[in-house]
Length: 118
Picture 1 (tube, rainbow, N blue to C red):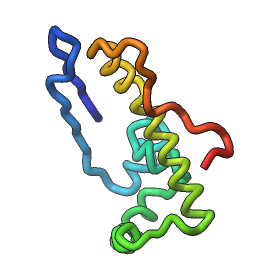
Picture 2 (tube, one colour; picture 1 turned 180 degrees about the vertical axis):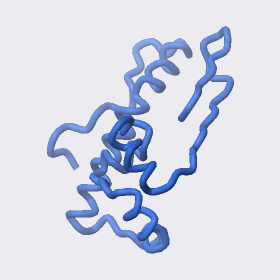
Picture 3 (cartoon, one colour; picture 1 turned 90 degrees about the vertical axis):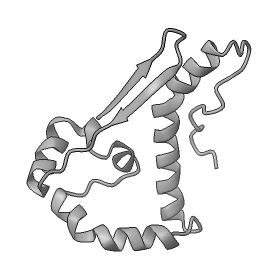
């Protein structure tokens, strides 16, 4: 869960983030009822693993993250999906920052990627 607090001038003054430890079974229930709170960026990139699968593959996943390459089509596809999810998720914050900074005429540098674009 993330809580953002804005000051009187509209700028972010505090960002708080909470993570709740859960059993694999509790995670599966939460993913069904509130998927937006359960690894939303990973889900957007196609990661639909159960709680038990995440626990089982955690160490292997960390090792692979250190050596992953974007040269394969499968990996590129996952990275593109993750980039799109980040662009969409943070676009409102970038828009707000641009508008509150008086950056008139500036365009959000994080627009959604066009379909099929590299």
